Image (tube, rainbow, N blue to C red):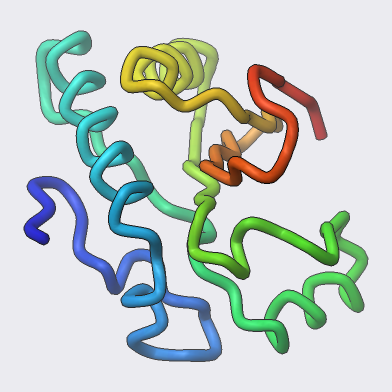
Length: 130
């Protein structure tokens, strides 16, 4: 599988080089398509900076210990989620809109990032806040 806008290393867990290879191909293809939509809508290259992609259990546990709100069954650990950096209202809108347009249905919205996942074992068509 070839991605136009991403390299798998962008999704590596910080404690495990190469772990981005554990990301779902379907998830990455949809995310790549969404970035293309965002670029088209904005009229210029519109990067999606990945704050968090795949997470090892160890890294996930370290986030919990540091006080981050985590889910023991996080889709990040399954290679089905990413947190995309957003810096302002306009970028938040462009990212969310492009994700919706390509078919994602699960989102978490924070001040500085948007979580998106493709975990079909969870409720669909939802948006939550952090």
